[in-house]
Image (cartoon, rainbow, N blue to C red; front, side, top):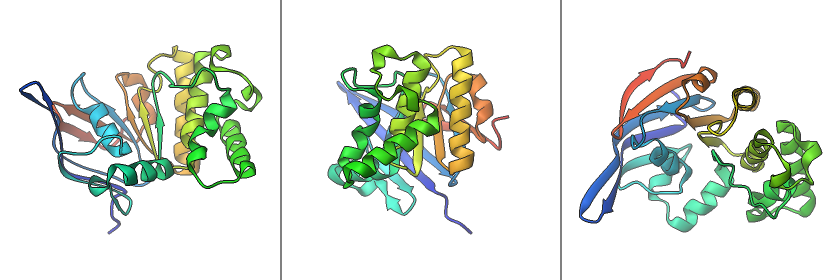
Length: 231
């Protein structure tokens, strides 16, 4: 039997707010297969973004274990987490998080500066990523010169330029009109199907879940239901 690509075992995250203990994630057990496209839904405060941040190595669990591939992410130091994240994780934000003083090309190149690549290797990676998301003709444009959909495509290119194993999306269409959102979801599905990217997407929009293979619901840090397909 193949080992799941992502394994969450009794995964918990606890914060202190004054003297109050907040537990956005509570003993979560979850397996995700390599190449799966998972949509994650739930009310605000249900633990969705907390789980995404744990999967990304941005945060560390208070209890439990988290394995991504062969890596015990839960036991890595902050320094090793940053290095692992740079090589294995792409993160797509709802509000793009582009650097306004950098061109589209320069924004996409940023994560490659953390890797031991030549200038030509970086150039080839950036051009390939821009072509993959359909914005090669916008490489000299600054974020203020791009539409919302084009900015999100730059953000997606930045997330995939390192050729990550895992693509994490936090409300990737939340600030877009329906037509543009559909275009972005089609792009994510193509990355999933044609390039085999494992995708975990947090969303509040039921319309976007039809692109996913699996729909998960979180509430109060616990998994409520696990459906075979989002459709």
